[in-house]
Image 1: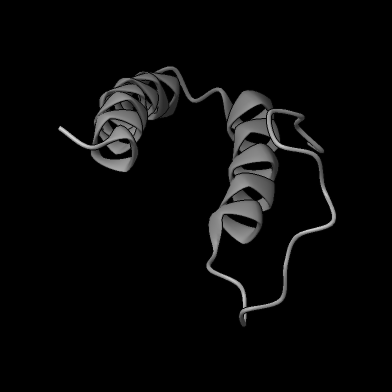
Image 2 (image 1 turned 180 degrees about the vertical axis):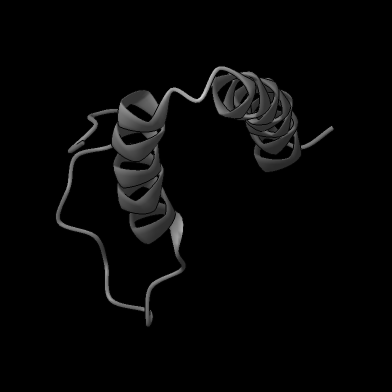
Length: 65
């Protein structure tokens, strides 16, 4: 398995875990925690979106979130 496929598989497993947590937070009506999590996930989604070919200025392995 290629490195990218392996890393994607790990991320996908964690995304499934996050989905379970979101579902449980909804059941608990934990709106403040859901809002904070939604903000964090939005930042991650923006960070994960493919660029326009421009090289990223961030260092590999360092989170900017």
